[in-house]
Amino acid sequence: MNEPELFPAFCKLLRRDLLLAARARSEWLNPLFFFVIVVSLFPLGVGPEANRLSMMAPGIIWVAALLATMLSLDGLFRSDYLDGALEQLLLSPHPASVLVLAKVLAHWLLTGLPLILMSPLLGVLMHLPSSSLPTLMATLALGTPVLSLIGAIGAALTVGLRRGGVLVSLLVLPLYIPVLIFAANAVASAAMGLGVEAQLSLLGALLGFSLALAPLATAAALRIGME
Amino acid sequence: MPADPTTAPDHGLAARGLACWRGEHCLFRGLDLRLAPGELLHIAGRNGSGKTTLLRILCGLVQADEGEISWHGESIRHCRSEFNAALIYVGHLEGLKGELTPLENLAMDQALNVARNAADASAALAGLGLANRDDVPCRALSAGQKRRVALARLRVAEAQLWVLDEPLTALDPAGRQAVVDMLVEHARAGGMAIYTTHQPLELDGVTQRSMSLDS
Image 1 (cartoon, chains in turn brown, cyan):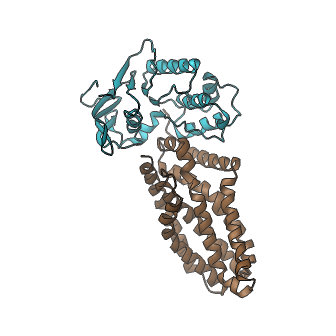
Image 2 (tube, each protein chain N blue to C red):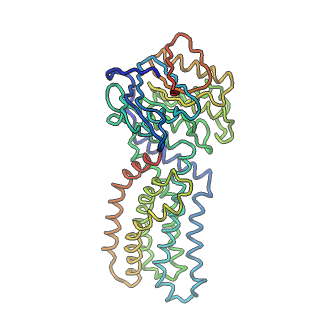
Image 3 (cartoon, each protein chain N blue to C red):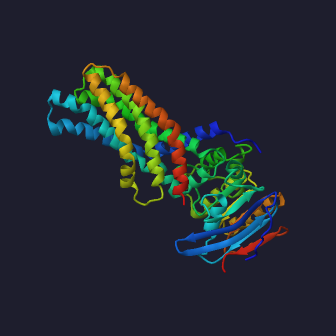
């Protein structure tokens, strides 16, 4: 019997999830629309004053990104759970944590990456100084993978529940708060022309930490969720 | 219940003293079973007697409340990777993605399990009467056809142990015969299988043991 080859399995699973997303678009497009709509409603709601908007912009964009990610979490393992693909995943000889990482990476490519790409546009809409747009993108680049990784734990824990949506938010939101604080603070500092190395380093550390531990926790949570 | 309280064999699957509770209700307790290469084990029992739960416990998907399962003399908790590599489970849920074609689904299964070569997938589908359904997404297939795709997994990933939960559900007589042929062939090649079914199977020339969960 051949040794199971982990890397091809990882790539195949990543490709499968992207292919599934390409064939069922609404699932991952909805959170993106949500993100754009929420942010673009603020200038209408609070008035188009440039100063006020640019002051609130970092927080608004980041809160919207947070909520958009959470909106997409429910589908991360749910369909696999319902059709039995999750059982097959857990019965694979490959380490479940690595397979989970492939699924999380697919989730991030479908939700996090588009958020990053769209953020400069929304930054302009919110009158963010253009000098802070790179920082906004950098915080999203470091922060959204953390949101996907930590969110996966919550999604895995609630996979067996019929209506896990609210519970996921309750489980996951407290863990998102450090990301929100450091990221929004970094963007605000950049808008005032201050240094942002400290915040970005902390976000990087959060990313490293969750990259190392979240897949293990998610795999364990999925095993519990199967029972 | 044919209790088989033996010492742990050095090969095959063995379970000792399994118990499973659902709240206050005991599905089974003190259950022993043993399966050596070339043997087929039929789990019988009325609806709700815990057959599916037992199979899921044997796969390691669910933890038993008591008892120990060993594979080639080693607890499956300690050799999960080897055990999973030797195991194929076809459960009530087919594990097929509706948006993907049968071939794409099987390719994923092959990548997740250990497969000899990827070319076998279309042959396996053809062997189960799905030769020209390759480009249809699985959600457009009938229940019986989906079941056939799931069973084709047995052909593409050469596993030693098959765990089949009601493999005959939704299959027509030709499909049932194909499953019977696969089981016989598997047993003759030294494979093991545990399955549940309410339909009598005529397996010629191979040892088939039966075990009932009704007690």
